[in-house]
Length: 462
Image 1 (spheres, rainbow, N blue to C red):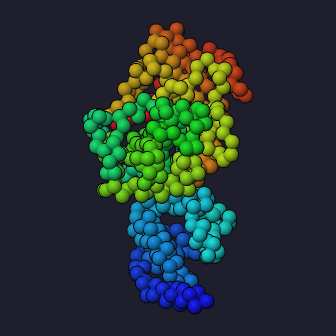
Image 2: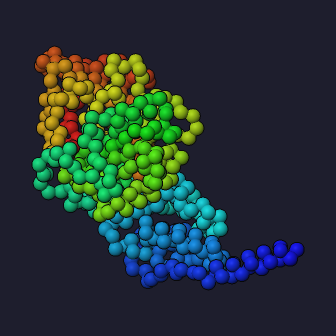
């Protein structure tokens, strides 16, 4: 009994001494809070400011050691990533980008931290509060009405600042000479030849995205072997500003950036098994100012750690049980005369009137006919005889992994153009409706659609 008593006394003494070791949590006056309506700011103050502001509010039990050390670490980490006390000093587009990321963290259950909510239930974001935040952001409202939108320019850490994509295009950059990222990740000049895994229409920042995969990633998606993705998988996410056309269709505009994810569970074990890189502008300048930029990548992808930190739902016919991690609904039937998803993507567009998205694919000969480097393209592409084009149109649906984005849903039609030596020898084919069965158009309408497909401008690349 004496030993037990001494152990208890020693524990009490250690506990008391621990209370004296209390590093401070820096606090300062609120500089410039986020610009938002009172109802939105009230939600942020109640649910986010405890950690993400310069005036954290702690309960009495948060000051008890050793728990205080954990609380302090969480607050300092949170403030480094997002500080609502100073967010108002940022450009409106960057404020909007921060709010979109916050909403996605909330709806995917990553924020507020579950362990924090367990001890601070008042910080739980209710469904009604989440709906208020989403209604304020309104990603598909007219551009002029979106919060933080100024003239349609993009901004924020995941988008290109206007200066990064404006001005006279530089000469085509040598992809082989692009500098490595600050964390040592080398640029992969082969990304242009990779195949499409999916596309994204980002209403939160007015950009389009191609998500491409190398052969290892494509085979993994086709077989459903993506939990986790196999080592050697590589993704390239290419972004363009959206450019509305006179016909009401929205096309890719100026090139913004390309991001790479490289899977190697051992080599990149300190960054969730992935190597991350981002290169911006037509000169492909590495992102950030030092290697710490990668913290943005890993933190942003944390909510989808159950999907091996990958947001993209790859289009595949393979069925994967459990949580939605592939996009079966957008796959194409094997009965088509060609399989466009095995070809390279040329461009995409969105028709906001019909809520559809379309991607133009080309076979090898079609791709060799194109010039898309240096930020400029021919106004009217000239395809060689033997080239085959495929325009796949999907209905759009909300991206379950990212509020403010839309992805392909059920295919609506596939249009094939087999290029001949002349217009008269070229052939147009349409597959539409349930099951994408062959359909017939009048000769005049078929010629009009064939011209539309062949005249689509390729999306520019650096």
